[in-house]
Image 1: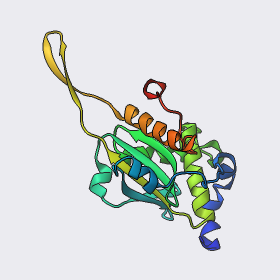
Image 2 (image 1 turned 90 degrees about the vertical axis):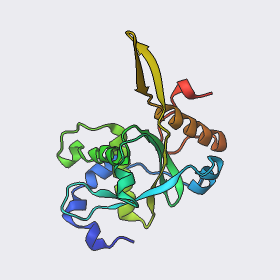
Image 3 (image 1 turned 180 degrees about the horizontal axis):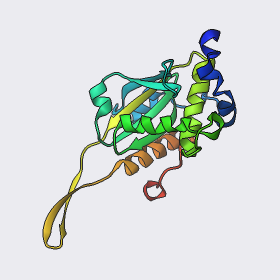
Image 4 (image 1 turned 30 degrees about the vertical axis):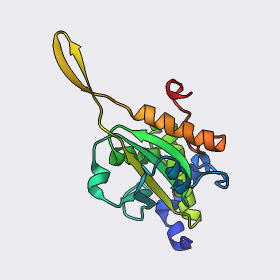
Amino acid sequence: MISSILRNTIKFTNGRTAREKWAKTFNIVNELTIDEFNKDCNHVFNKEAIIQLDTSDRQTVIEAIPLDKIEWNKNCEKIYIITKNKKIIKIGGTRNGMKERFGSYLCGHHVCERGKSGKMSVTNAHLYHTMEKDLLETECEWEFYTWTLPVIDYTVNILGNETKINVQTYHAYESCCINKYKNKTGHIPILCDNCDPVYTK
């Protein structure tokens, strides 16, 4: 359990009102484990980082500790899964790699309840404060698992020039993963957005 000394430092007490508004509560009993889902996906997902409280002097209150910084910093398309005690709570996708995606989640810090601008996505605010609250109150482990997607190029004739285009595919992969999860459980992961209807059967 997180020590009461850490929990009561100004850095975390200042976020109490924000957590009360933005943190979500949920039960993970009926969620698949990463091992169960990964088996159904032919083991394409690998653990990439752990998520923990950031006790440094930075304003943000959570941080990701990558297993491989080079892999974490890669600018590429990935599907990622966020787990709590190995149970899946979110499936998402990124075009620009995990460093940039997690940086986007850190923007969830900028809520009005922290005296910030309030210019952040609702999704980022909910996930950011949900993780912070849970890490402060429990001994649960939060982790990132990722699937690095293949690069797909398509050649098209543009004004008489054969032009190679790098095709963005993560939306399709993300939707297929969410749909696969839903077919197994009857619901999408707790903190997940709906599938793109274009890729939902």
